[in-house]
Image (tube, rainbow, N blue to C red; front, side, top):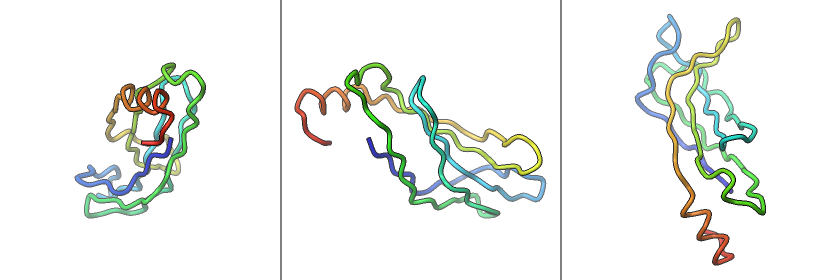
Length: 104
């Protein structure tokens, strides 16, 4: 499954300098996470990525159908700061693809 991350908007500042070095982490429950590149020094609360995640869908597609996307502020000298999260239930879409054997 390919997921494209294009833009982020209304992102809170993550640093005391009122900037944000943002990246997106995506994962399905129980699977390894993927990360975008870092959009450095955003001052206008926006980020632009045009980044593609490729997730392998196995023979048992119903094992994990909820995609979680998290927005983080990258810190170099401490742990990164969590900013936001969204989830998408893709059960119906994945089920339709496996039943019809077509891409969607």
